[in-house]
Image (tube, rainbow, N blue to C red):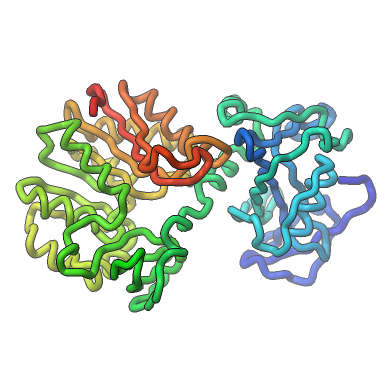
Length: 419
């Protein structure tokens, strides 16, 4: 940033340009928003991210650590701004050819009383950044370093890292679709709906590595799938769900299971087909997804066949946990990112209270084993390790690149987890 007078574009609450241009430090009125950008600069060789320490003469958050970023100037795009801010604050060049290139997260902040209303775009760049090329802007920062995940979390827990919660959300929200979505061939959409909680919901048929399958897509990301071949209809299409079955090895006396996140109800169908004597409650927040599953994924028939052994509850999973119903196993197959550390700790405590003696918590976590994108998952596991005596993380593909995002199955219990 520099000392000359700067102007910003003003947006409305739908992020549409209003045509207004204000001086940078103007207090914004109700319904007026400016635009900020942040940049996660991850070093590919070790997964560490570049962080800088704010100058001690800053009026706000002096001495705190942060990632590069700043305000978008009038007439400037988000992508242009992030390149400029990174260059000004670190001396590094990053590539961002379009407004959405490298952008992994965006949110809106509302503070009508303080006039601090803004949209924030967070970008993620991975490169073998040359430390000799780093030149921090002395008026903005007094120090910099490439920090490990543990270092960032430690700073965040001490409230010494700005936008820590949002940084974790951004890393957790990064696309998890690559391993499947690009491999769907001859895709035919047969159902579309908009959901207030999730956005776009679609059901499509297509071929995945030669098998005819049906997919549930949420914002173009595959959330569930089933085989259309009659011979395979009761088998699991997603490999990670096979690891849910380890609950039988860990606890031989399982009777009642809770699944948070029904999706296309592939796992309930498999579980009750193979364990008709057991019961399962499935909590799914989206009524649109339940509707699609009843019509296109056999949920209606499953409910008729299972009877009282299957309960489907349309409710937020974390609110349902407040009821403290008792289960032998709780499986979480829903997104975990958009919650604070305190909320996560409270959820972990509720889960423990909802488990019978020797009960097991199981979660599907889409994350790499190393690197900046692992921050949210590692934070989740750290919190659960404070609540439960034993924890275990099992990557679905143990031979995969540790910096590559994949499904990992996390187990927690007060009973030893011995496979």
